Image 1 (cartoon, rainbow, N blue to C red):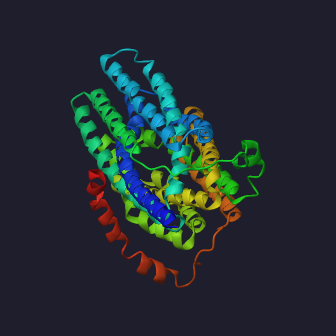
Image 2: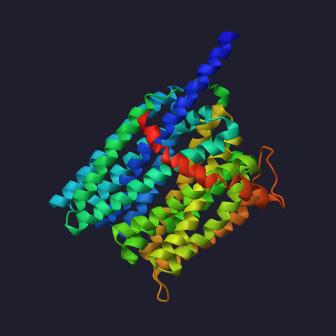
Image 3: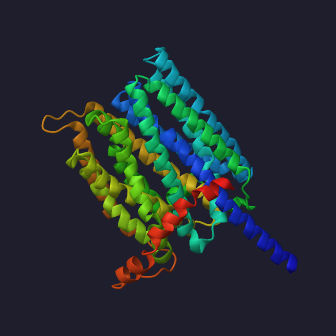
Length: 460
């Protein structure tokens, strides 16, 4: 009995330590994404890629990433999740080398017309390695975080990661604008991508220190894609997957062209562009802990319903005014706080509705449908921007309007088909008083405390 109790305490300590290491890993991963991933679309524009090809970068993510996740979910049956992540993250890290080479080749004037297609090709390979490890990570994290505090812990992790991503992304914008003024834009991109490689390697090294709980998978835990599709409208998980597919398709039609709209149509500088894009993340940081508390108390389904109602108006808001201050404090604000909470709620919703043994496979199917929505939405945007000809309105403006209308239609069709599986507190007339004024009041102070403790995670 003592040994059993001692063993449980040791496992609890290992899980606690690993969760802290996970936040540290996320900090370096976010640095990679802010210095590299966030600048791949601007990089594509800088090497004279067509508008359609820029939109296809988004479509590539939606196509190959989820397909690779299907294969990644099958790896969990054969190999430890930690081993899978160590290999896939290393390969993902090394894929920044071709991006660096493309920047240097463009600077030197070699293969100018070929480079946009090379970027698309290597980005596809990068997305494959990135997707292969995600089911293992999702399953691993689900076994580490206790159910009752899942919303709060993931919101805390997202808060710390989001804050560092904003700092890196805005700093990179000033850095890149400086190089642009000195006609060294490609060298600026090459340096940023080199830093992305460096930080992802540190992130990879952090995985080595993390504890992985054992998981036993049985043949009965496997369910085929055909089984999933045939039952998709009968289960809660299937219905949110279908809803997310259609909602993502609608949103990506305009989302895949947002970089084109801001950099080419509105002719923003890199600094203004990144401030507009990442201001949404800043606003999300202010409420992410609040969304976590809301999900734990009232349920993820209710949070999904509230936030996905706000998102259909965002495409309309982008095109109403081109003033940077308006773009920061209206569409970017609403988009940032809504998407951040929606991603958090969806992950918790899946954890609540899928058994631990099936989570790796379930998330791969979920992301496959999400990716199909991204791919089809981006391809639709690419086709429309290329062939849509209108005399009374700019084609890109019309595309944003179409996107918003479709999102609204999907919302009213899909949200009523889902439900909250676990018993949660009801939203009543005292909701505003009990939650927003009592529980939400200390949230801002908690967020400041977590942000100030970033150094603590880095020292360990």
